[in-house]
Image 1 (cartoon, helix red, strand yellow):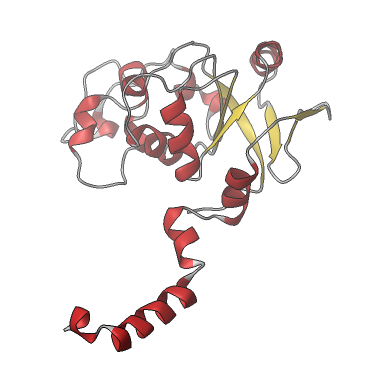
Image 2 (image 1 turned 45 degrees about the vertical axis):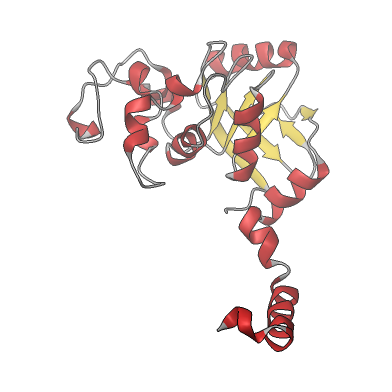
Length: 212
């Protein structure tokens, strides 16, 4: 997976609590057997004025001009600012894939649903928890300042505002190590590739019938 070290990026404010995974990627898109192509369908019911499905070209649909990520001032945002309990609802890895494929690298919120939180790290997407009062202030600053950008420094565990204020955040050491080094579950396993090959070679000698 893609490593996450430091980014400086524009922020899009999604001022809604309890955003569930069906809102992030509606159920009709889960029919896809691929792991790619979900970006245009992120927040589908809010993002478009008409109904969508896998066989409908998103470019032919009517965007909702009032929805935040459709607004020109937030174009190209890579950081999503959200409210409490983000990612609640049903378990679907597609929610993380949709956000990442829509261009987001991180979401900042006061709290997350557990399954979404865990899925995010496995996909190299950073769910960053900050206190509710800090998130409130960031919402005010984002909405008052066109082009508002934050710097997320994962090795330093800080979020830096345009004014230079450094806001610390906590993250599990193991998850941080995996994110900084771009290691998903497969990548972690492959770190032991030499030991795995040595074991297989030894077993071929010890129990050749297993490899017949």
